[in-house]
Length: 316
Image 1: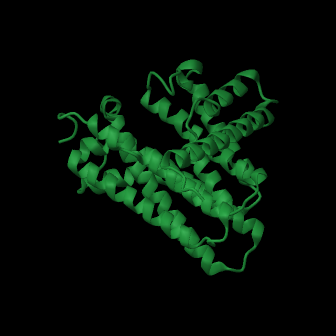
Image 2 (image 1 turned 90 degrees about the vertical axis):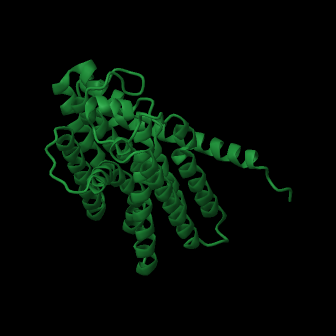
């Protein structure tokens, strides 16, 4: 059989990712109508604009790929992705109320369109609705709530940092703690939630394998989240300076920032490789999903172009 060229493989992955994104967007639109269609038109509009905008769906796509590795049917994997997108939208709406950016994904943020009070209540509603698709398992809900609590705590620490109210001895340790809570815990949800749902519906007796799988996914979420946030900090340094938000590049300088980014990206590759060892080599669909996961995470975390954008005065 002729060996596929790299460009052909990448084109195949991009086509598959496009199909996944379309599935997720269609499911989100359908279920926003179902979940809020009986509410006031203004409430429906707030929720619809919050979760139905032009986001890249990175967290939802990751959860969907993990679901495919575990052979979770679409009827369930799309509910997981929907829950994750609702909870992510909640964080964005509330973050915007705090940071007051001019734009969100090229549009006016919710608070600018509807006022701060309605934006806060709309964010609250998004978080509550995000529990509904995963509510059939108490263990899944507990995991979700614990990690979302860490996300909120991360935002609290973010505000304390911006107001110079944090008492810390180690700047690097503190900023990594903030970014871990704000970002890595959301990605932990995306990576681990499908496995917890899988456990709840499969009732497997292979607890040892499940524990190993969960440890790998948990670590994958941690390292992917930090790499993602570091790259984001590099891109958003000017905006973070204006809002006095914690930014790793500003706090640690270019060399240490890039060192951390490379280290976490390497860990992502390591844990995906570890996941691949849990998959039967004869399971072609799962092997494809692992390769898709490798491709997508590498694409999202690619930072080489952003390095060129770091000017001499960025970082110390």
